[in-house]
Image (tube, rainbow, N blue to C red; front, side):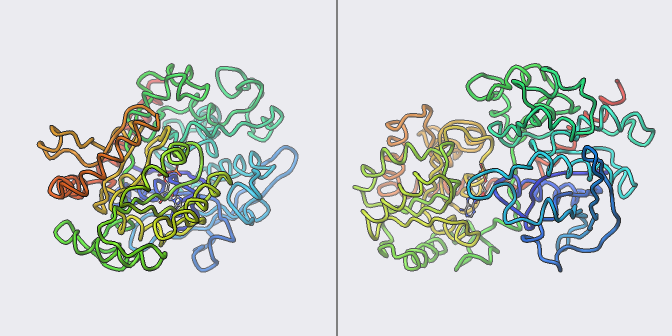
Length: 491
Ligand code: ADP
């Protein structure tokens, strides 16, 4: 199958969150399975140095209202993977300090930037640099793609049976813009209606992707059900409920070349399931030393790497951190985001020297070191479409403590007696998003870590021995692509 996967970020070129891991992990797995895959993203010049940008294979032009805007199409590869990567090079839009925001505010022309990107990718495909069987768009930044394919390109012979898949990575980001931005889509005004592209008077690019894609996916089966409810649907639940079997949940995988304690070059000691005790102890003591934590092997070290937002459960941590810190435990946090949570973490570090390490910033290496060094991982998210860090934690033998929502519910099995007995348990789960329920799960973890090391070992074994790689999920995406293509034939 020829697959064009379009994403606003992808590792190792540019990343702000899980989407970057997913775009690359999935593209690589599809490509390794023998499909012809092109991954397309903007050429963020300040993040992708010149040597990594590959070769110019052509140029496209897109009419943005009355202006004609050009972009070079650069093509590069990833080490040892047959995957092709296109970088859409348009410096006015993408030669900026960050991907989406500056000084806490979205760039004022984000709709124009990403509508241009989406349309330029389709122009490149039309120019025959790749004639795909399926185009897979991701999140609002590429939400216009299914609309253009189904309403314009499919009228041409080459695209008559090109299927579209659209993946929602987080319902909270709608890509909502003033109505007059409709003119930047190149689509007729008639689509600006409440069933298709309009939402409360604005152009809504997430809704657009959902409305026009042949198949809609999201990143876990539980989240696929949740987003059809008013609690999680962020207002678009009626549109999603209408999808019926056009909506599918597929759990993200883990890229074993990036996240694998056996070969990870970013951690001080590599280890496997057999050597996890020794390896983790070495990584823990190195991190304690590096971050100024007390070098206490017995203290349960909780790790957390996260955007510092409401979504991720920091209100629960704020309420219960003092209680938890009375026990023989330590915290290591890494993240950036809302100022109130940055202050919360700094305050904890100040009040509990040697027990709390607050690292405000974005640091790939430290993220790996924390997964390897921590004994347990905290992920009490209010909602979580899939979540990657709980899966990385499994791979690194670091049982996660999670709220039963979205992908967390699909990947963490609670340490009940029965689940332990059956060797299924791989972490700690609390069902209600309430601080007392969170605290109860934390105490169960502390109790087991201190008094039942054999049960703890079972959790690590269950997490580390399961295959979390992309291969199975990639198979499921291929089925979705086949369904998308067959829908174009039955139209
Ligand atoms: P989300 O996409 O909602 O932010 P995910 O768990 O799906 O959450 O993915 C987050 C990804 O970003 C993970 O790979 C995580 O390790 C990484 N990450 C988040 N914050 C940081 C940070 N401050 N430093 C390094 N990596 C981070």
